[in-house]
Image (cartoon, rainbow, N blue to C red; front, top):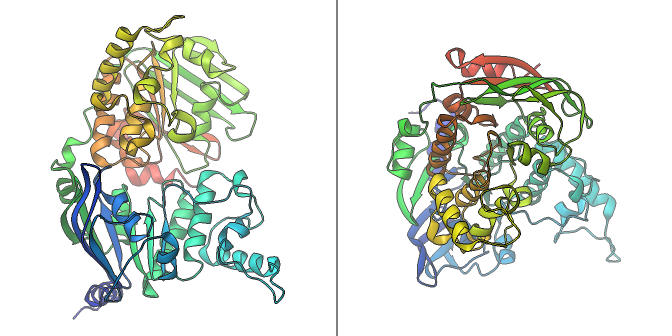
Length: 509
């Protein structure tokens, strides 16, 4: 007999009758079979993790469970009865709520209005009861432990705060089934822990939760069972305490030891040096670091610590207040990113959709775009043969499928979109690279390709500043690591000194 409360709760959940049952779901898009005969049981009080590479079928599956898409074959039961989830509204009425990676918020409305949207309170005369709705929203936000102003306009919120609004919307009516698609990708550590607390409370109340994440440590932290998908098919359903090595093998057919390439051992002179850098917006107060040729230097810290703003300041995208930037020993201060590119510095932003890619244009155009002015095909006239040769080379460097070069970037998975963004940085003569969250929302398989790309750049003598919230990623790739806290670089670690606990301690005051 189990004596641990969490084990007893898990056993009770997995022995309960499913609240939702998916039978042999398949989805065809023309001749392409995106999902093939996938069956899934969701039981009350359980966190059921969906795990798989980009393009494995996870998004297709949850879109059908949420009513945003309909299966080509198979059916869904709720409470033992077959249902047709032919719209999101139908699914919501049956108690299924979803938080997708693509938000469904109204930017010009307040946080309160977005949380209440479609389920507004009204008085007897049919007039919106704004005070009632605001009080409910404030109470919900307080109960969830989020740092969120109910009166703020959504358009003025950073992406992480918008993520919180989506979560508030989803849980406001006490869902029977809650679907969370990469919910912590934009959250701070504080808000991530608040979300985990919410998930545990909902479990205790009997909510069935579908959770998608690429962050391996989250699976064991809050999951109960894991369903692994590969190429649109169900590979296996296992306990959440299954080792990372086994989960990766199930997902990709490869082992954990294959993920991080060995760092280059040939380092040169300092290429990039920052001394007491401060930005006018106050996000960076005192940042000092240096990066040598052939070196990958990590910049770690909590969300909001100022690490992204360091990269933007170097690239000329954020105004500098004081301090020095030295490029090959020469002081520079770029007023615009175009000046930085001409100077030999490339910055890869964390938000590929809003800041990095032209989604309606093809992969070909996105990869070659900056090269028209700064790179190998620069000139007043287009050079089709040279451009095709260049994009073919770039595709090979980042493991992008060249045959898909003429498709719009919006068609691609997050992994392939990220590869297109990374390829842009190779299209011109660059010696210093700043990668800001280069693997956000990217699965393990695509990460391996990205890590090989970074290692190859390093081996060829590029100086790389790697800004990341994924500490295992930094530990696996970097020669050295700096930690930022409250706008300041506060600690430095050599690779021989890497210790996850010691580094994490530097994140906090």
